[in-house]
Image (cartoon, rainbow, N blue to C red; front, side, top):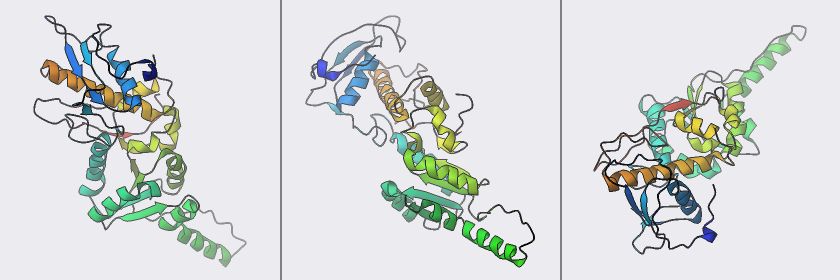
Length: 303
């Protein structure tokens, strides 16, 4: 069901009871009071989720002291969470790529993410970095992997005797063990398969940003076996829906988690085992929530 805020007053206070998504206590009706200030899109998602809940609800979108829910849900800290969704992913990737070993990772990034690459360069200056140019990306990839040297050597050997047929598969350099892609979907779906064709022995890593603009889980085949800090349960949930963009379903999961945590805090439900949508996380009173994300090797086989 889609709700349009153009048909709903922006100052809204109401009480509802409908089908349950959060289990109610036996002795009383759960209550939730919210006054978030946020974008129209986020307000629509909040209404869509809450109108399906079994809560006695007080909701206002025009309270002067409202909690500000930032439009960019991926890079902002939701209330009670330690970090943003993407910062939690980046922390896991940094541990896997740089903290346990060093000097064997290639960071591939586009101009859009130059600031993120600059931060990594300051922290890990001994790693390799490649800025992708959309006009020369194939040439740049061949050069950074030393594929051009392999092709040149093959040409020299072949010229020794043109009557001999020599089979040749270009080989990439062996000192790069891992590649970290910092890219959006449009560029990522082009360069990741190209890197894979030249470097089958390397492990690939990325944040979920690389597939946010895909419109189907099946489209992730371009990133097969790439390691991404993500909830496989969330992927399965998304795979069961007809989506415009995967990122929209992730945004809904983040807002759902925000509302779930508010419900836990306001109704003192810490003793209950209530799951979040975007990750497996422990919710403890007076402790910020850090998402428990595992490195998921992208696979479209089971979806």
